[in-house]
Length: 199
Picture (cartoon, rainbow, N blue to C red):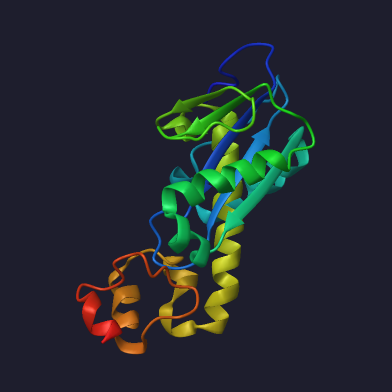
């Protein structure tokens, strides 16, 4: 069972991102404020859940949260500012979209840039520790997957409906065969022989 809060009697927003390691598509982030007495026994880190379970939990989180927001930065922005900054700025955008101002941000991972004057706490494996971060991880993941399903129809040969843009063998092979798309991150090592792509 995940912990309901980090600090008692505090409005906490859990923040997490999805898609940092992908070769294509945007990075998504979510911020979620759950009720202080929130209970959900199946809530867990999105990576530990099936897609069906994540979708079910997304509906529950969106129904039950005091406030939530999902934001993203696309592959061009990632290439311009780097993936770490893009992940953090996506979290900033998500926090700015909340209808309630949090008193503390719980950040999954070990790096963050302070947002306005709201205190934050970085927690490694926070998505497997705190309910609000787990909820944010589920929203970020499901919204990003939804986007990848959509663009997979535009470029079916890359199988983004299956690999979601991650560097699988089939994804790298498709890049070698068909080249790059407008959704690929050019700042990433897209193939094992990157140079041949751009000659």
